[in-house]
Image 1 (cartoon, protein in one colour):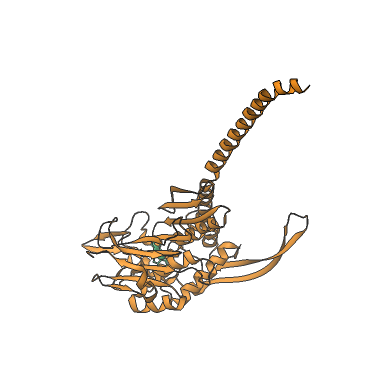
Image 2: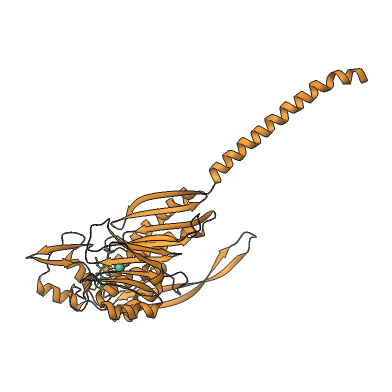
Length: 373
Ligand code: ADP
Ligand code: MG
């Protein structure tokens, strides 16, 4: 018995060794594959929406799925807020002067924009639709007929946008079979006169950044940057823990030229400039940021305004706010624009037609002008 076992022992040990070696190799291979799939990595996706390039850079696990979901969310937002599509805003325009349209998310966004329209004294007016359609900057830009412009201007007034809200309870089922009681808000929105029309073109790209920003709440995503045209959102952390760097375009140079770099730890940035869309007629240049008082391109002595809404501002749509503020400040000019930013706790960089650069207090340590600038 003992002789037999001494003969078998080395062979048995070898089998056990081989088996455990194979198991270890399998385990290591599995671990490697698991780590490869689940490791933190950087992923960039370029798409196109709202007439602009959209670039998302995400850090974390499974970033491809998160980026694809954002593309879908921006597409849904565009459908709801573009007057050219068939969503909430298009319905409100179609029913101007008639029955209210009942909405939820779009109503919440409109409430915030209505407040900005008020606080900017109408420099941003989300009912500018009849006038922006005449100029047709996204189609065939041209000087409108003065009589038509006058008629269209008479239909522009954010105070004639009526919004009633109503709260309601709804149940959300949870895992243990019970449910949570939640409260929601419905908005009944109407434009008081026929022919009135909403145009959210001034805030659409910033609102898209608000959608993109939701990605940060996905499990495994640790940081992100998303840019939609002239609006950018910065959330979470970069892997190196350093600040995000955002280049500010030189309004006098070509699109790639930078005036300087902002170093920020988060928030939302939007730029509005007269160089973005314009046409020339009889030697005069007409750009797409309009003064709602005149219905014509704003002449406030500025070439561009960049607005930063820092993290932690008390508002639901900081991206849309930064975008709307940039447009409003462009119309208001340096002094009034600055006051408006202050009242919101936002910061900005104003570039005058004379090339003068004004950086508000809260951005001073965060903006580095280009050296030869
Ligand atoms: P962009 O759309 O090029 O990023 P803006 O954010 O400044 O630029 O928005 C400009 C668009 O907003 C215009 O094309 C027009 O549809 C609309 N718009 C222009 N001026 C105003 C204004 N004063 N108030 C509200 N909307 C405006
Ligand atoms: Mg804007």
